[in-house]
Length: 348
Figure (cartoon, rainbow, N blue to C red):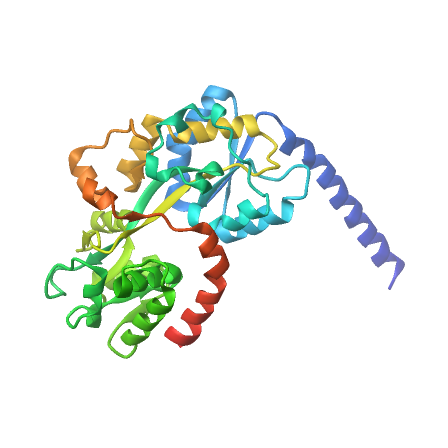
């Protein structure tokens, strides 16, 4: 290799090292808060209803690191042995994060720094809430087009009956929750997944469709290619707002909870600012705004939602008794196995 090549490589290496050293103080600024989150509308709502107020009140410069959750988790795990990580707050789904807790990547939350946490609804105070503060919640319900199915379904078991199963569709990326739904339909138990597998295999060749994403399901429902599915009630509200003709039913067998919240990486650089962000997310004003703009339920007791909106996004007292909080450890231990089964045996 020529001496010119070596010189150029040495120059580039030196430049990269210098850039890294120069960048370090910027990340360490006390006034900077880096928030890892999904992009799109959610990031905009976090900025509008939470971040802007926190920044103004506390003199913070908030930077949003937007990406899907799996790569953000991978990054957190890769950084967990470092003295300081690259983010201060992470938006996370509770059921997906048993691994982050087990591997000591998340801060155990100090509730003394979260006054608004005292208002959390009782059924959201599970073990994972010690690490991921619940921000919003919804539940897995039946979505159906009244014009395409013989009657309003009342249970997940109905979806396996003639007249429903021919118009039934599943979302590929929701494979684990499809298995939970099939398990509930066949035995009334969320975690009898061997029974759920058998129930799903019974549908093969009987008209059931699998679409890749939530957005693809919206198009299939709009076009009439799918007449009934299972999905988060909040998503149904968003689709209704977009003119897609679906109604919802909380299944008799139970409603799997979906909880989304914020955690603090154990090695966050700006933990005081992170706690300010989490507490603001639980404020009455932010919670009410997210209910209106995002279609998810507040997680605190003092948030007030108009009765007509509550009827669309929420659950009655009787339905609330049927909420099932998924076990993050079960999900962590079985996710890969059931994804392989879903791809190979059900879709294959």
